[in-house]
Length: 247
Image 1 (cartoon, helix red, strand yellow):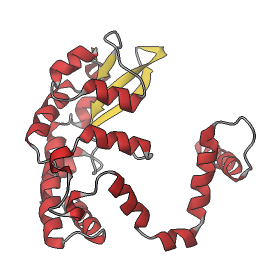
Image 2 (cartoon, helix red, strand yellow):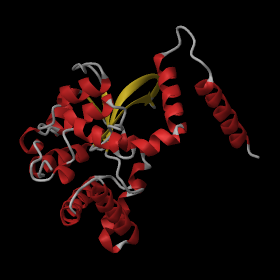
Image 3 (cartoon, one colour):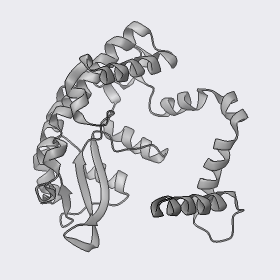
């Protein structure tokens, strides 16, 4: 057995001890959150009984999934993608959608951390899959999963096929904006240090103060430094969002 496997087994053991142990005074609140998650995963009876209800309740908090709600979706005029990302974060979902936001060690000064903006994470393992289109079997299976998921949650199949195809085209466009993996090997080319004013010039239609403030939990000032990995991605995304249907 490799050293890594031994370390992984030891870590898994310690995590299990942590989530199965009773809480103690003055421990961080997220310990109890871990225990609740662990217990909920073990309660298969409750999971089967709940079915897809928790997912429907979550979607309702996001204003409803347009493809399921249908033509009466109220977000046609009120939808704001940053507001949705904020709700995603509040509910514990991944908010690295459209843009990847993180706080990471500064590789040129590892004594500090720095805000990092990167191109989006895609639903496929690599941008090249999406660029091949539906002629690629993996992309065809991905599209089928998108349609079947919407139908399972109550969407009309014909509507799901149409709107999920438009969604796939949107994601394919995002993929075309992303820097290929081989071009990301040059780490120095990804180290583009900017301030918020410079980012606002790159993508003037995005409410950057709101975006950073809500997702980072703190206001970004004019003196704060931000690494923008792929500046052209932000500019192209900004323009695309102005011409894309809110649905």
